[in-house]
Image 1 (cartoon, rainbow, N blue to C red):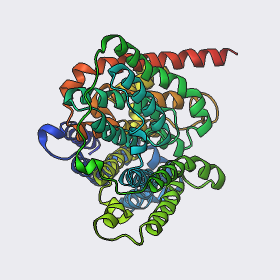
Image 2 (cartoon, rainbow, N blue to C red):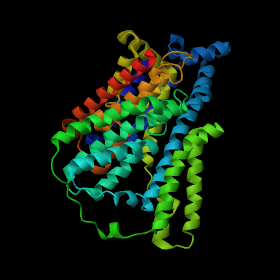
Image 3 (cartoon, rainbow, N blue to C red):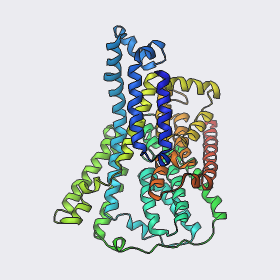
Image 4 (cartoon, rainbow, N blue to C red):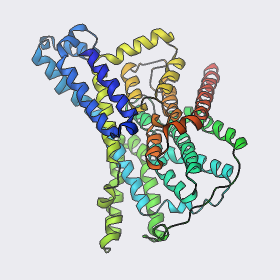
Length: 459
């Protein structure tokens, strides 16, 4: 059963990677994967626990010496492991759900129109620089998935030609992943490290912002020499021109929404409650505001602008996808697979944290970066001092590589998957046009981090 769990995991992953040819939504594959790995785990519990590979069981058994029987195994898996892991997973899911709803509220109230109206240039290179920097900093304030959804929606209003839009959307993915890596709320993986206590908000910003910026700037500089010409603006439809909200409502909800998202780290610092509580608090305030704001409206307008109507537009399959993936990784962590993997990585790389993290980042372009970071957090326990301590080099570098490595292939990050879904970007097209640029930025970012760490530690 121990090996069967790995087989289920690999097959589930293939189904997720081949979502388009198979025509099966990746959320469906992830949910099956998440439940089947736990089924295999509980069925083979006796063999797995007696082999001694599960550190979690060994610790539990040391505290409960009479638990070495079928009833003890079931009790351990059902009442200890699943409950504990579900608590950690729920924090991430509720955070995501809150963030996605807040952004959807801003979008439905045409708040982002205030930004698109300011972008007037049609020169390709100039537009690329503007959009890349806008995405980079927006991604740090919102998060890379949300920013990509917003920016791809903006691109549709800025660029008519499909292939040019694909190119810009792909560069948005690179910038969003780079911008998300250095902010505690910018990327699901950084959120996980922050919620888990591996990094603190101020330190991750100070240490990872410059390497992240390099990861984004290098491909853009390269393209500045090869890209020529102007973009064609699309002709606006009647629906795009129609204004559902007043300028005051638009400004209010844009500032409230961004304010609510930026308030989350402050909320955590002041109350010491988990970040998702701050996110739900912000959503609650916006929900009450919109209810009061639209109480006199009726019919289609009220349905479009009320949070109840907006919730139907929130990307629930993505939430289910994360639930399935994180559940599967939790089962592998509990059963002891990840412990064995970390030992193997340590032996092969001679415990070189730069090689380990570079490998994790490149892997995250094939495999989603969420389970890889969840895996690394399970494989490498936190220590009091050294590279694995809070704000240690290992965790900072992991935030950088897992965040930006996903850009190498379009299915490697939530942002890439979102852009692919919205614009129907072809996997092979992305590989030919974008993957090398992303690799170039990726290695430049790691080199910058190494240089920065060397300089700082030599003083």
